[in-house]
Amino acid sequence: MKFKFWGVRGSIPTPGPQTVKYGGNTTCIEVRTARNDLLILDAGTGIFALAQSLPERVPVTAHILLTHTHWDHIQGLPFFLPIFDVGNCIHIYGADDDISGLGIERAISVQLQHSYFPINEAQLRADVHYHRLQNGESIEIGGARITPLALNHPVVNLGYRIDDSDGSSLFFTGDYEPVVNRFSRDDSEFAAAQAGILQTQQEIVKVIGHVDSLIVDASYTDLEYQHKANWGHGTYEGGVALAQLTHAKKLYFTHHEPGRRDDELEAIYQRMLGLTPPDLPIFLAQEGGGYIAAEAREQDALRDLAQRRA
Image (tube, rainbow, N blue to C red):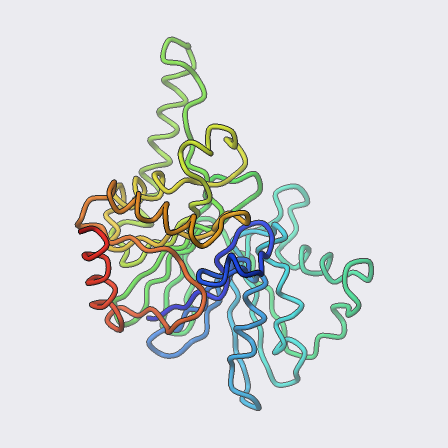
């Protein structure tokens, strides 16, 4: 398996000179399995550039796995150009809407209403299929097994584990805020709440455990989080804790805050290198570059990491 970041920004696209290095598109990750199946994690604005990278006049079969339907994770979908061409097959996966109970097709049909977009769903010329996913129920796509995991967020959010036929694995959280106990220790409800949190942790470890690459929502520093609790996003420190809890082999921070400049990201990264155990390689998600594979570029990245830690 190999994967490539096409969008690493959270909430809103941020093009400009201060985001050139890490990128300003919203969330989108291309995954290529060992059998070259095309899996796409979220459809933020980065999916437009992904579409342009595909070979021309070659039929496209794409599997788009949506973590949730907040705007920054679906706003690029109408600009995924293969969806307009006859002969292409586009599969869109996601959870049921927690209010209406309808499937992922509801969000897409609303997005393509005339009030929001000039082309309606009936004008899509590709063969489009919608798939409703259930928490913890794995599906097979080509040579890969996909396991969705419901994670804490204001709306239903599915993280995805991908286990490829070559033995490699990846987990992407989407937007994720770890659950904390809101009761004080002397409160009568503290113990019950804590038991629920521990059960949730066990379920997370069961799905994510020993993954090769863990990609996490790390929008905030711990200091920033004090003013943004319950907004549905995680911290750098929380990402490290999740990686250690699940024994992940590598950790990638993504969903960079829209106001975060490249130099600010670098400063945070340097600080996190000093706080993270040396046996856990950590990286900032960055748009472009080559594919990140299990072997390709791995030694160079680890050598650079060692130099940074020194």
